[in-house]
Each structure stands twice: as C-alpha cells, then as structure tokens.
Image 1: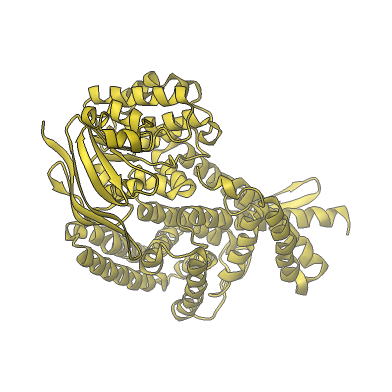
Image 2: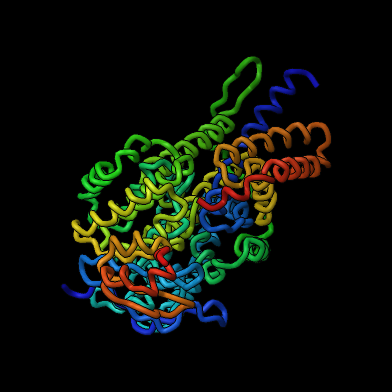
Length: 347
Length: 237
C-alpha cells in the first residue's frame, strides 16, 4: 500500500467514521438517559435517506404514513394509561404531543411537497418527518417496560429493529437509493482529492457534537438529561421526569441519526435494511467509548470507520468480520479495566 | 399553626412483608418533627413512601392535597423535598450544577440566583468548591451539598434521612445547627435519625418507630427525659 492510497483510505475512513460518530453519540445519549440500547437507530438513519430520496423524486415518502400510524397508536396507549391512572387532566397535553404535533409535521410536509420545494427545504422536511418516529416508538414500546432490566430492553430493541425493517420494506419498497451530493465542491490537499461531501460530513459531525456539548453544559434541560443519566433516583427527587428526559433524548438522538442518514445517502446506496450495519458499527464505536462517554464514542466510531476503510481495501469480503472482531479485544479490555469500579456506581 | 403534612394509617409493603404498619404522624407548619428508632425499624421506608418512591396504603395529605397517588415529581413540584440517606448526588457533575438542578422544579426562575447566593452564604465551603465534581467532596461536604441542593427547591417540607450518618461529631453538630436554623426560614422539617439525642434536642416533636409501628410519641423535650427511651436510645443507664 502506497502512502497515497493510505491517505485516501484514511480520509474515506474519517468520513464514514464521522457518520458513525453521530449515530454513536445518539446511541450513548439514549442509553445513558433511558438504559435502552436503541438498535433501530441505524434504521432511523436509513429511513431518513429513503425519505429524502422520495422527496427528491417528488413522491410523498412512506415515512408520512408510518408517523401517522405510530402517532395514532401512541395516542391510544397514552389515553389508556391516563384513564388507568386517573390523570385525565393531562389529556390535552398528551393529545398535543402524541397526535397533533406529529400529524401537523406530516401535514406540513404534504403541503410543502405540492410547491416543489428546493433542496434545503427537502432536507428540513426529511428531518422533520423522521424525528417523531423514535419518541413515538419510545411511548409505544419502551415506556411500559421502562423499569425492566437492560437485557429485556435490549431484547425488545432488537425485536423492534426487525419490525422496523419489515415496515421499511412495506413503506419504502426494496429498491436502493442514492441521493444527489449536497455539494459538488472538491479540493486537493497534499496530493489527495477531498470531495466537498466528505468535508461536509466531517464538519456536520463536528458542529453537531459541539452543539450537543453546549446543550449539555449550558442549559438546564441539558443538565437535567445528564443528571438522569448519572443518577435516576436523584434526578426524580429534583422533579426531573425520566419519561420526559427520555423523550428529549430520543428527539435529539433521532435528529443526529437523521443528519447522518442525509450525509451518507449520496456516498452509499441505502436500502430499507441498510440501517442495521450503520447502527451496529456505531454501536461498536460506542462500546469502545464505554457506552457512557460522548468523546469516547465519537473517537471509537471514527476508529471503526478508519478500520473499515482499510479492511475493505485489503479484503472487501471480510471488512465487516474485521470490524466486528474489534469488539472482542475491546470487551476484554473494558471488562478488565472496570473490575474495581463497581462501588462507584452509587453517589 | 396549621398542619403541613400528615400520614394516616400508612402501610408500606416490600413484596408481602409489611415494613411500615398503620403509621400516623403529622408535621405542623414551621415545626421540626423527628422519627427515631433502631436500625430496620422502617424509618427510611416511611420517608421513601412519603416522597412517592415506594407505593403505600393509607392517606397522605400535604397542604390540604391528597398526595398518596401522586408521582415523585408531582410531590417535588408541590415543594415536598427529600434528602435521602444515600444523598443521591450527581457525582460526575460540579457542585454548582448539582445546586442548579436542585431548582429544576421551580417554574418561577427569577429567584434562583438569590437562593443560590443564600445557599453559598450558608455553606461557604460549597462556594469554594463550586467547580469541583460532587463525587470528589468529603462526607461532610456531600451532606452540605445534599442539603443545599434541597434548599434550592425552596421546600415547604424538607424530609431528611439520617443527615448525620457517617459524619465526624464536629460536622454532625454543624449539620444539626443548620437544620435548627432552617426553622427560622419557615421550612417545616421531618427528620429521621438514629442519633436520637441530637435529633430530639433539635426537634419540637418526636415519634418512636419500632418494627414498623409507632410505639411512642410526644413533645421532644418530654421524650428526651423518658426513662425507657434513655435506656433504649439515648445511651443512659
């Protein structure tokens, strides 16, 4: 391998890793706040790409129908739960959040589609359509078992992923899509051609990580999410509702997954089931970071991207095997490193 | 004085075991009420039920509202606060962030800075260490932070679970002085303590809890001279 090829592979790896980093950060965010390892995260990213492709083709995406169905289901479950707990006074807020807002988003997207919107608007529409999915799934699937073990939540999360893949086939069809690059700009650095899309991916990952840092460090809501992650009982004693913190985490997480879906769509052909590998590789990155550290997850995910890039050059057929094999030494190292930290869990 | 908080025939079960049985007690406005008793008597369980972390049977009234079925967060929004035995601090976060989160439940944010200044005046040590992570504080400082964080919510009733647990005698005296001074701010206090003497010296009224039941109650100044209590809890002969 020459240094030129190594540089190209390195840049390609950083770009792929940056996409994984966005998903990995979202995975860590949701895990720390809700204890759910949200496997369908990659599906959210893939659905965003498919949504954007449909919008580009001037078709109303299947995401709209998916959101409407999920919103109706979530509303029904919320009403039953409110009736059971005698909390009907909360009904207007529940209707607004679980029914009116998601339907308004779908309605707005449907209206906007009639005007042949420019690319920037289509990007916003794709993100708007995708962000309600994870919070609605949280209400339907995870909220009723919120006190279950991490293993139960993980098992349900895997099942949910398979359900979503099926729904993806139903709503988006079996064809793969590749969207137009967001920019045709490219530049040469040290003899290596770097595309604008690659730069955009890295910049977007940096900007969103930075925004997340500002949100967590400088806003009360961000701090309340961190508090829920650090100490659930302690945060409840401050009046922070874990369910609300979870919803915010799902909203933010799906926004990040959505952005990564938009960024990856011009680079890779995305199918209804492409999300699994994106999610799994981001998950490997998050595990490298210990599932609790955002910078750790981001660095781990970029590492996974670079490893994947070099692995696919050496042996395209074995690239996934090589990437997932990384988990074994990392898990051994993690389990050895965390032997004496159990007593630090409380306080 | 009007009644701030009351429990009537409250029973709390772990699985099928009754950890607290038919307990009734009340806290008047501006009063310090203590619940003393041996280890395992159900004191902590009682406070966990009062804040809503454990389900209970019976009636619980706070400022005229039946709060028995309310969530923890709804009780906190009504300014009923608990400083638990384990403190439950946010160990990775700074002292200042812990205190700020104490005010999370307040809708009116205009007075938060003033309350923070008051807490720093009360516990200057916390101000010195405001940028330090809560997990790096000493035991006494953690208790101060837990108290300060609860005060940030401007509680009407503050429930304290074993505030002296594991602290050096000098710090214990400081903590009890602080508790006594909170009465002057108009905060009602329900204090659960194993350190019965210190608790009764600070409190207005006391309940004795044994194996989940109230076996004795009365003004603290009477209980502190009760021969049975002196033998059982106050280290006398």
